[in-house]
Length: 520
Image (cartoon, rainbow, N blue to C red):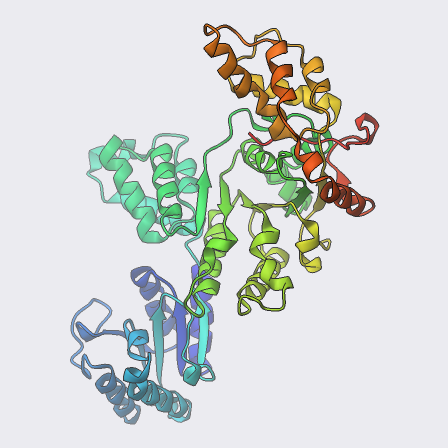
């Protein structure tokens, strides 16, 4: 049974229990209505739709000649049918816009009166109302009568049905080659996380462009669709994966140990899906790069969540944006979710409601999702200032592990130099990485990595020659490391990490600076 079928069964149970008003949160009218018709039929009701353009209509879209296009007139017609002999469910498409502000007061009152009366109607003439809405903002006057249901995004089985329908609609000579061997599962996975209509559009575009279902075309279109609302940002895989990250041997070994956790063997063994980890440390020490590299190592998408971008000037819209983003993440399935500088986005939650409680609500939503989610999203949260983090987000159960990412050690700085040289196409250049590392005492990883482009500018101006160790050492002498300008902050972070977080670097290779990495 798909997720949508499970919710449809719940709707049928609510109808049998004579709930008068269901508020369905969805943007997919066609897909959800088809399931609601089935749910109503299983509960012994005849379902019809209503909108302000057509009025009441039957399951096949034909006018039902019942009531009016005006919402008040339609509600009056539903009331009148409580004296008849037919059980009816009314799927109201456009009702929310008629319930707002003073202009909607009469319609809101009529709906409220009807919701109070419907549970008392005899069984033979029972009526129920289902309101379709893109959000869960139920008017306060109706809150005590409405049952709110967030309709889930299509799961993998539903996307598979969309794919089959797309192929079935092709000419017979194209059907056999539309999904070549080995591409069907990939094409389904590529569209998971989209609505039914969006998935169908992606498949149609692939068929038009390539005359077959190409997972790469679908994935590219999916990336555009997911980023369309500005709530989520989809990142391409980082070339090199964790090999592009210098140092952090403990953290990298821990991450690599979880790459097999989603396998069929792991599920058969009873191994739970990993939840994720929190990376705490000074800015520029490679936390963000690690998040990007992890997605490559896990061979799954990287989705960046900008919690600050969810905030809106309209009451309730911030929370709705966050819920929609989390629902999309759940639907995507296996992915790495990157919560960057989480302490800044949730600052209002620890400052006495300075933002009207928006951050506190967001924190509560995130904590509940992280604790109870059933999907395969691996969350990597990064933070520069642990003192600004709400303590409840750090407890065990939200994350699998809490890591402290310190300034890189001598050996790590050498590894960062090597990684940065590879990233700039200088893998075979004769550079004494150890000498450069020694010249970068107390540098962050990003400061070490920045030496390579600095040296390249100098070498290019000097006849486009190849860079040398002397160029990198000279570049290091021009930099005042952040460790000196923010020494007090780093000292506090190190003191906090003792006994609270695991070190991302092996302790026996660390000096006074407990090792960490780069951001380039």
